[in-house]
Image 1 (spheres, rainbow over the protein chains, first blue to last red):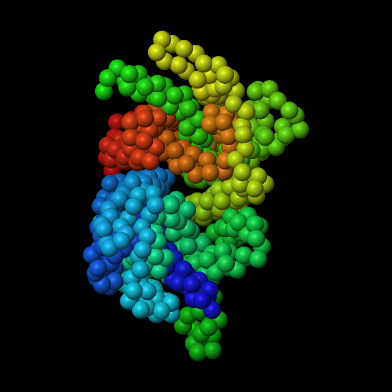
Image 2 (tube, chains in turn purple, brown; image 1 turned 120 degrees about the horizontal axis):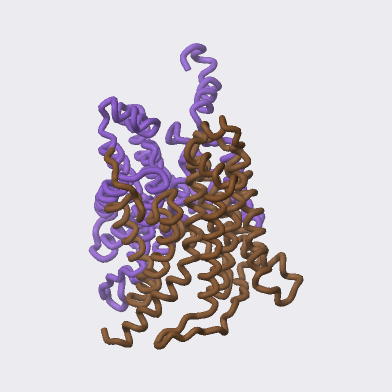
Length: 303
Length: 297
C-alpha cells in the first residue's frame, strides 16, 4: 500500500512540475529552465524549514515567491530570443543553477551534526514531515490539495481573458502584437507563473524525499517537465495530468516487470506517441469528441 | 601568477583548442539541420556517440584495425543512424508542429542512450587512441599527438564539408531548401531527398565527431551524450544559428575556454563559466559571432 501512496506522491509533484511548463508552453515558449526553478524552490523551502525552523506553509510561500522572481528575472533576457535560441538559453540557465547548487555549501551546527546543503553531497536531514507527525497519507492529501488548487487556478486562467491572450501569443506572435497585446509582458508573466508553480512543487519535493542533491535537477528533469504537457496536449490542464500518470505510473512503474527492457521501451514509446498523436493525447479534437460522448444524452446540440 | 603558471595556462588552452574541433563538428551538425529543417534535433550528439559505438561493433571482428578504417566505419554508422533518425523522428510528424519533433528527438536521445547501455551493459569501452605515444615538444610546450590528430582530422572534415556545401549541386540544393523551401521545390528540387541527404551528411560528421571524442578521451561511455548535446547546442548559439564558420570558431573557443577554466577554477565550476559566456552572447550578441548588423524588431 505504501508503494502506491508513494507513487501517488510522485505523480502529484510531477504534475506540479508539468503544469509549470504547461503555463510557459501556452505562450509558445519552450523552456528547459523549469527544473532550475524547481531546484530553487526545493533548496529555499528546505533551508527555511530545516535551518530557520519555519512552518512549512510559510516556507512554501517564500519558495514560490523566490522561484517566481527568478523566473521573472530570467524571462527578460531569455525572451529576447525564441525558438532554438530560447531552448538553449533556458537549458544553459538550468545547468548553471544546477552547477551553482553543486558548489553551494551553507551549513550550521545543530547538536552533534551539521545540517544544511553541502555541495556535491546534497542536502540531507530534511525531516519536517516526520518531526511534525505527518503520516504518508497526510502528505499525500496535502500534495494533491496543492495540485487541485493549482489546476483549478490554471483552468480558471485558461477560461479567462488572460488565457485567451496567452494562447494568442502562442499561436501567432505577430498577430497578437498587432492587435495591441504586449507580447513581452505576457511571456514574462507566463514564465513567472510557471516559476511560482515550480517553486511550490520543488518545496514539496524537497520535503517528501528528505534528501535533495544537484543531480536530481539536471537536464533530464527539465526534459520531463516539458514532456508532460507536450505529450498530454496543450488544450487543457488535464492533458498534463494524463501524461504524468502515463509516464510515471505506466512507463516508469508499470513496466518494471520488463526489467532492463523498460528503459529501451521508454524512449521508443515517446517517439511512437509523438508520431501517432503529434498534438498530444488530449488535443482539441479529442476533447470535443470526449465532450460529445459524455454529454450526448443531456444536450444534443450544446457541446 | 608567475611564468610557470602562465605556461600551464597556455598549455591547457592549447589542449582545449585541439579538443574544440569535436565541438565544432557537432555545432556544424546542429546548425545545418536547423538551417534546412528549421527544427531542433536533440538526438544528434547521442547519435554521434552511437555511431562511434557502431564503429567498434563493426570492427569487433578485427584486432587492431587501422585508424582510417575506424573513422570511416564511424562515419558510415553515423550516416545510417542519421537517416534512421530522420525517418523515425521527423518524416511523419506534421511540419507545423515543432514541439512534437522536439519531443520525438528527445525520445530518440533516450532510446539511443538506452540501446548503448543495454548492449554494453553500461561499461565504458576503450576507444583506440591514435598517435597517443607521439608528443611534439615546442620549447616549454608539448602538444599531445592524439589531440593533434583529432584537430587535423576535424579541420579536414570541415574543409571537405564546406567544399560539399559550396561547390557541389547537392550543396546548392541544400542551401536553396534552407532559404526558400517552396521556391526550391518549384525549381524541381526534391525536398525529401535533400532532407535525407542532410541527415546522412550531418550524421557522418557526427559519427566522426563521436569517434574523435572517443579517441581524444580514450574511451566511450553513454554518459558522454548529455554533455556533448549541451556543448554542441551552446556552440551553435554562440556561433550564430545557421552560420557554419561561426560554429567552427565557436567550437574552438568553447573548447579552449573550457580547458582554461578547468585549469583556473577546477572541474566542478568549469561549465558554469561557459554558461555565463553563453548568456553574455545572448544578451549582447544574440546573432552570434558573425552576426550581421543588428536589425530592430
